[in-house]
Length: 155
Image (cartoon, rainbow, N blue to C red):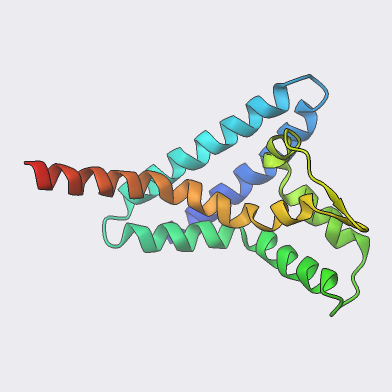
C-alpha cells in the first residue's frame, strides 16, 4: 500500500511540474529553476522512500520509480518502434513523449543537438530521461550506502 501511495504521489508531482515548467517558460530562466527544483524533490523523495522502507529500500525505490514513470517508458517503446520503422504511430505519441518529459526539457534546451537527416537527435536524449528520473531517486540511497561502507572500513 505504501508503494502505491508513493507512486501516486510522485505521479501527481510529475504532472504538476509539467504544468509548472510549461508556465515557467514565459519568464526567462524560471523554467530552469523549476526543473532544478523538480530534481531536488525527486532526490528528497528517494531519501524519504529509502527511510520509510527499511526492508529492501533499493527494491522499493526501483518499483516506485519505475511505476510512476510507466507512461514515459511506454512512450519510449512506442517511439522507438516508430523510429525503427516497425510501427506507424500518430504524431500524438511523439507530442505526448515530449510533454511527459517537460520537467527536464529546459536542461536539454541548453545543449545543441545536431540534425541527422530528418531525425532530430534530441529525441535520443528523451529516450534516456525516464531512467534518469529513477537514477536521481536511487542516488541518495546509493550515496548513503557508500558513506556507511566507508565509515565501517575506517572505523
